[in-house]
Image (cartoon, rainbow, N blue to C red; front, side, top):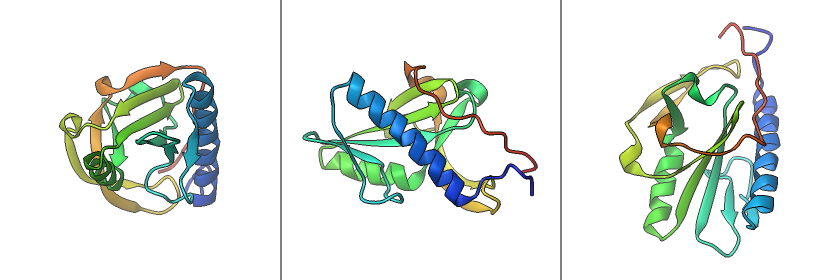
Length: 154
């Protein structure tokens, strides 16, 4: 294992740092109030107060155009689609090293769902992910960015 592999605790800390950036940005620039999910392992991160809108943030440690697609855990897609049936709007934000992008959950824009493995936390984690072409992502701002973290030997 490489020395720059993150632990789950470090990964959670990075996620919380990025969530704070998103929350502060949206509350300032979109005049909304975000309510944090019940715990750090909830399926989606935020609910917009007094609206039927749910928000998820995925932080990426690379630039937006590095890959042709970005992936999202299928558990989030499945839950989001069920909430849309109840009248909710579901917005997924992607915070890359070069800025913030958003995507309104749309099943027709997912090109496939299949198992994927991540190993940047020192263990193999396999679960189903849905793949979204980056051309469906809408640029929001480059005023906030994720931290670029060097991951080696994975």
